[in-house]
Image (cartoon, rainbow, N blue to C red; front, top):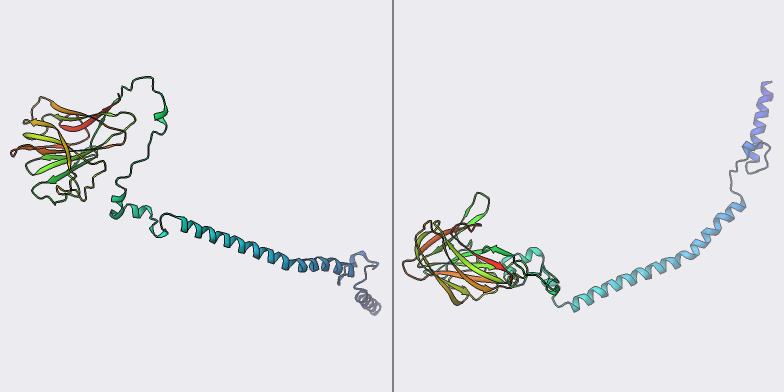
Length: 294
């Protein structure tokens, strides 16, 4: 019995191996082809032939397109460099522009307007606004040492609120230079004020001159010798020792928006010696301008 079953099993195995590629087996679970049929070979071989035929054409088209794009980009860069008014080697970064070498070149460049188009608006009411404007630059020059440069400007001290107060000093040798920038829109009437209280020390006579300069002065190179020429004397102020009585002096002038105005306070007599700390308040001895509209 065992031999009969074993021989039957081997016979069935040989039959399966003999009909391995036949799909007409009686057992549906055994209809698994081990070798692809001719139809499948024809099906898979046809796209392969098509791709192998088209592949050189696609590669050539891709190469030509890439080469054309690269050539066009190179020509565009070359044309841009040739037509540029500034050579490429002179293109400066923001770090370069902040260096001392180039900062002087940009010192006279006007700021962009913050009030674009306001000049085209018809104003029907008076502009009654009035503002106080403090000097943004305070420097000291020494007549006794004409080439001496005070790179930090006048002496300064830190206030409680974090602001820095600058010392204004007028003596026989020392003169103080101040600069104002006209701010806001259409406040073109300015008035320079010297308010005298009990905070200043010393006494004497001070001459106030306008300096011919429309640019911001450079404190790193400012000295009595390099000071721009003066225009004219705009006033003389007699300063008495500090007292509780508030007195003052003023001078009116026109000031276009964003314009620079420079003044120098110099001693009018040999015995003049006046000093005070200029901070961000006008309630005591201070130098400032007021701006208002017409």
